[in-house]
Image (cartoon, rainbow, N blue to C red; front, side):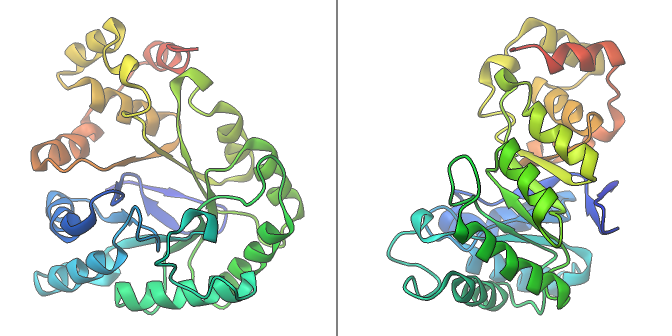
Amino acid sequence: MQTLTAHNGVPIPHFMYGTAWKQEDTGRYVQLAVQAGFRAIDTANQIIHYHEALLGEALLALAKQGVTRDQLFLQTKFTPVSGQDHRTPYDPMAPVAEQVAQSFESSLEHLHADSIDSYILHGPYGRWGLDKEDWEVWAALEKLYQAGRAGMIGVSNVQALQLQLLCEQAKVKPMVVQNRCYAALGWDHAVREICRTHHIVYQGFSLLTANRGVLHDPEVGAIAKRCKTGPAQVIFRFAQQVGMLPLTGTTNAQRMKEDLDIDRVELSKEEIARIETIAV
């Protein structure tokens, strides 16, 4: 599988399997995804939407099948209290830096791991800028990175101004950004431009579910017909060709294989330019 590389030189497989909303079926779908060929897996220590511990059980099962930890890229997240329910994986009354430390140790335990390949803040505390808590979390992430316990650090659900502030003021710049990607907003063009400038790997999620209209667009259908593939695969390949790392959360084994088969698809410059502005 091809890779993308951030400014710290760490490569990530260029397609990632997302485990959100899988709940008790998390382990089964992760095993299907890895058997299909996925080698990068995204989760979070947030029991409302993810089941990190079941991913960990799947990793143990996969190791017995010959797919060991060193063959996989694992990414998880620190989720602030506002994104948790009563099952918070840390003491919600502890200082923010201690919350990060506790959540990280909990993730290691869930995943049966000694380190995390990519560890990211699930979303800034501030709505527009960055709050005091954001800088406290980031300092804790920097500490984990500098200690070699996290191979990359980053942020999710971030706006352009917030990302620019991190790039300008943090001791260690983000290596990864993961955002919901809307075609109507130019596929998150402003944030992607900052990522391109600073050599940050941009991960796009909800590429299909946030853009259902695009999937039914006649021009996308025509491109899919020419490439002998489906509209979903056209969007994923478009994402890769403009420098994104797409996430998919499909639970269908055949679609997993179809998604990974997009390496054979090559969109023209004209097709890429059209999809860039198709819903703007």
